Length: 99
Image 1 (cartoon, rainbow, N blue to C red):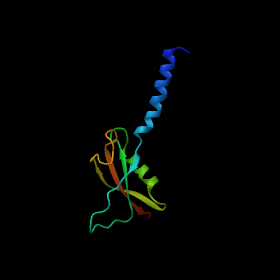
Image 2: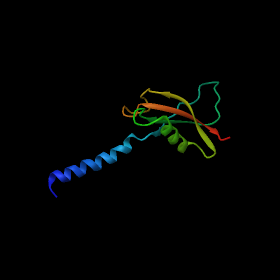
Image 3: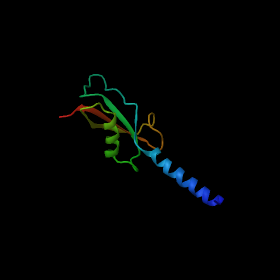
Image 4: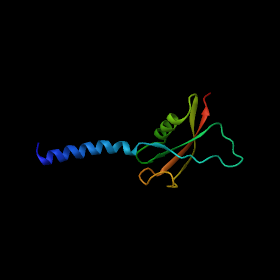
């Protein structure tokens, strides 16, 4: 195999591996403010609003929620303390009991 072909295969493999680097993932969720009550625990997801939709972030949140609960959107912020530059949006959900 020549060097150019090997380099092209390596670049393609790296590109495919990097695709998962932009998948939404769980991060730190701020607690509820004093006096604020919620129907369940909070879950926050880092995601890129250009590459991933809020529905994809919700699916990632649903995987973090306990059984028999539903991830309900609460807020989205771009504070960068909890999410990296490439996935700057942090969507927060409440895991409310399923009806």
